[in-house]
Length: 87
Image (cartoon, rainbow, N blue to C red):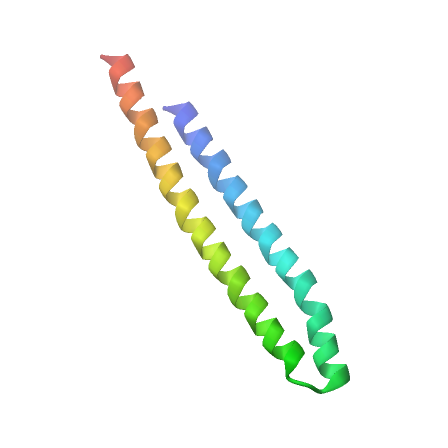
């Protein structure tokens, strides 16, 4: 049971780190578009900024839900194996 908890913690920790990297990458990509929209006072960089934001947010949510289902399947399979080994 102890290994299941530690595996679950490691998986959730990697998910959190990946989401932080996604947010950091999103911020790095957004800054030039924001500066360009301020400098040139046009809407095209702002529209591109919104499109990039939507893409990254949707990718983050899809990644979160996919990894969550994978983790839950992994935990359920580990529990089934531990119950089989205990019997």
